Structures are given as structure tokens and as C-alpha cells.
Length: 459
Image 1 (cartoon, rainbow, N blue to C red):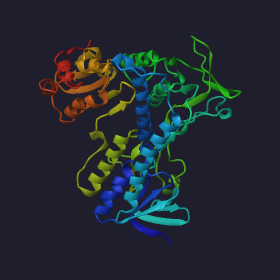
Image 2 (image 1 turned 135 degrees about the vertical axis):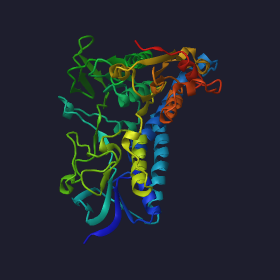
Image 3 (image 1 turned 45 degrees about the vertical axis):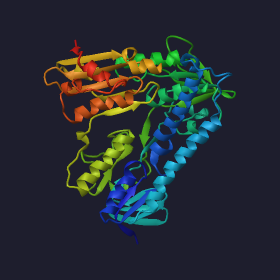
Image 4 (image 1 turned 90 degrees about the horizontal axis):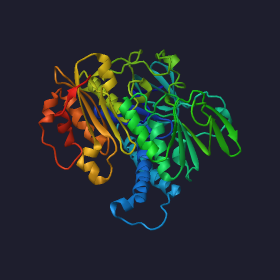
């Protein structure tokens, strides 16, 4: 006999707990199921630990450059990876504990620990316990892909999750994958003191960005001593004693790289393969993502999918917005939709990249008349004063409507400054609104009106 609830939420990532909070506040009895770590990817293996470790790597980087600021630090700068890990673990533990204690103390919420599997469209089993509900919400997240590359089964490899737990600085880290995860880890461990080789199949790193952004990021990494191998069309692996040989078969350079550690950063997959979705007849696409409509409803009435498992976004902020969309439609009579949101994200290298809207390439492909403004960070006083003047700003607008189309801000504070453009785009304000705004000096954001005041036709 199943224990009946008004709703079941599977997964305690970014969307799940907040939805439980809204549902219980509305008087619903809710079952929350989490198989292992409360807080999901962001808290446990994503944003929180990586940005904590990036902060440690930044401290080491600045310490080595202290003399450029007129500060003398005697002796060699050393990184204690056990201390770095301990700091990261403490921050994770607090965040995870806060989520779990909130849910377990929530009136109207019953927490179940274990792996959830559908028995039918209205029933889920957790171990020996059978639960039922008229509404079921999936928030099961994703995990790193381990691609079936030749020899991968013969070597010890790391993923974004397991690399977080190393207690010594790798002698030579080979990062396979030049996307957001690979690039962040490559810079982080180079600053910790590792030799780093970054291997990417595509002709450039960060291939979804504009060419100037790709080139600038590549230059920043190379300046820090990271060896970059793009166009690696024949990646394979072979153990060599305690080390690993990574075959790249590029047209230039050595055909192989020998490293002490290998990080596989070649994408992610949804955690949908062991949920029994077929018993509920819930449709997935050819990559395993749950198929949803514009309000995150699945193919089965009464079942929704939020976060990384639905293929509508791979970020914490999109997962949280999924919760907002579901709650608004169910509880507030507010018909919010996935297509209401603008694409935005950050790359948290140093300096970071803040991105919103269309790229220059997408604007060109659209065929619309557009204007573009750019400014190197060397002409941003705040960046120069901080001694961090790598990168540039770029903003694109529609020449006829004055609508802001997109922006790339690669530079110190770029992940924050880009929100000036983002908020203006949500307000549907013409670019002249920000152009005429008076921003605080000295900041990075104060140069955005300057960039908008110097737009040129995109030819």
C-alpha cells in the first residue's frame, strides 16, 4: 500500500527544496526524496566547491605577483592542497547541512533518503517504501560524461567531482575538454602549481563563443603557462607506469602528452537513466533529457521536470528559475514560461567572462542591421588600478529599434557588470537608457555607457 502525498519532489538540488517550501506553505503534504547529497550539483560538486577553490588559486596568483603592487613577500609561495580542500569541504558542509536541516524541519515535508524509481505515473518507490502523489516533480540533475574513447577504461581518470578531492598538487594535469569546466580547472590548477596541458578536439577553446573571446581566453591561459593543444582529432589513452599517455594526434606538436593526472571535462549527461521513466511513459530525447513544454510539464500529466535533467539550461540560475516558473503557474496563476528568460551565464576564469543574449556571430547570422561597441580593459581605469587589465567589453544593439541584443564582458568584474545589460534587456529598454545613465566612478560598469556611446555599424 502506497503512502499518499499531495506532491513528490525528487532531488534536493536548486529547484527542489524551494518548490517544497512553496508547496508546504500552500498547505500541501510533500515528500522530498534525495538519494545522497542535499544541495545538488551546485553545492556539492559545482559552483560552491569550484569557486571556493578558484578563490584559493587566485590568492596564490596574487601572492606571486605581490611585488608588482609594491608588496614584498619573502620566500617561495606554496599551496597546501589539504588546507585548500579542508576550506572547500567546510563551506560545502555548511551549505549542504543548511539545505537538509531546512527540509527536515519544514512542516508538511517528509524527507526520504534513497534512490527513487517510478512504479507508475503516480507512484515512486524508495527502497522498500512506496509513495504516491498526483503531482511529481523531477529535479535529479546531471553528471560528468565519461566518453568511450580508446583506452579510457585502462587509466585512472578524474572528473569535475573527483578532482575536487585531490590532496596534493598534481605534477602535470592533462585536461581533456576546452569548454567551461575544463578551462576553469586548467587555470585553477596551474595557479596551484601544476604543469597543465589543455586538450580540445575543436579548432579553438570555448567554441560557442565569438572568435575574439576565444582568442582572448586562449591568450590569457597561455600567458600563465598553460600548454594548449586544439584540433586534437584522435584522443586516446594509455597507462605508462604511474603516469598516463594522452594521444592527441594534432598536426602540430608532439602527438602524445604524458601527464600524472587526467581530467575528463567533455560534457555532462542527465541523471535519468535509472529512474524507471519507461514505467511512467515519460518521454526523453536521444540524449536522455526529459522532454518538457514551455512551462516544464513532461509528456505525462501531473509530472514536471526542472533543472539540468530537462535540457533547458545547465546552470544553477536556470534551475532556480525553473522552480519559479513551476511555482508561478501552479500557485500564483502567473503563466511564466521558459522562453521568457534570456540566455546568460558566466565563465569564472580570472578574469571572468559575463555573457548575455546573442553573440556577434549570431547577430551576423540573423541578418539584422546592428551596431557594436567595444573597449579593451586596458582603457578601464578600475581594471588598470587593480593591475588586472586583460580582456575587453563588447555590446551589440539593433540599429533600427535600439534594442540591446547581447554583450560579452571579459575582464575583471565582467561577471557582475554584464547585469547592467541583462537588466536593461529584461526591461526592454533602448540602449540609450543605459548610455545616458550616470554610473559610479571608479568601477568597471561605468564604462558601459561609454561603450554604448561609441557604437559602430556591424559590417
